[in-house]
Length: 263
Ligand SMILES: [Zn+2]
Ligand SMILES: [Zn+2]
Figure 1 (cartoon, rainbow, N blue to C red):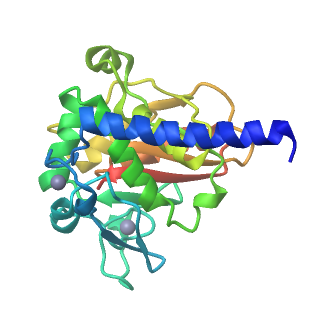
Figure 2 (figure 1 turned 180 degrees about the vertical axis):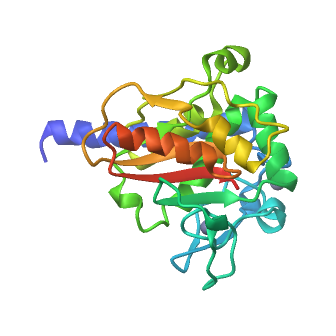
């Protein structure tokens, strides 16, 4: 072993010890809390969720949520592969007769109860820091999808310029960055909203669809035939993801998969 390798090994070990120490110190100053109920997390409080994707359960959720929220919140165990509608395993869903421009969708949980409240804090009450635990949880779920290894880059659903100025951040971009880091994939903010269509309250399903038509444009060409992971916080009727995916395909994308926190 040369002096160089010894120094290198020592440095790597030192870095490892240092990062563990820094983490322990940070935990002491800012103890990790459950993002859903805000209770302090202990090492004995590791939550487990059975995401029945490809028949596998997921581990490594320590420090991401508490045992109670893991057991009680509305996680989606198995769902329609096209629109992520929660389904019993082996059941078939018609997606309300819709044909989407994206290939598949994966959702972490149902948009109600504790999950809905947490998403509200994340989106409307400035709790940007929730992107980290929520993004990591979403990563744990999409990592089980059979198509995940095919994805080449990540694109978040954009906000309109006006909404971005009001809120100061785009929650989908923050999630996309966490996913990009965990998956080791580039995040490309190439979509833009050409119509301000975020507030669709008071519109029925077909009005929403009509209102969203042509709402997105791609700022640049997408590598021909590329596989994109489109990221958003919530999937309601699927109209937003459908329109965004259409814009990506017009710009050259070959396949679009969707990942959302709630459905
Ligand atoms: Zn909790
Ligand atoms: Zn469906």
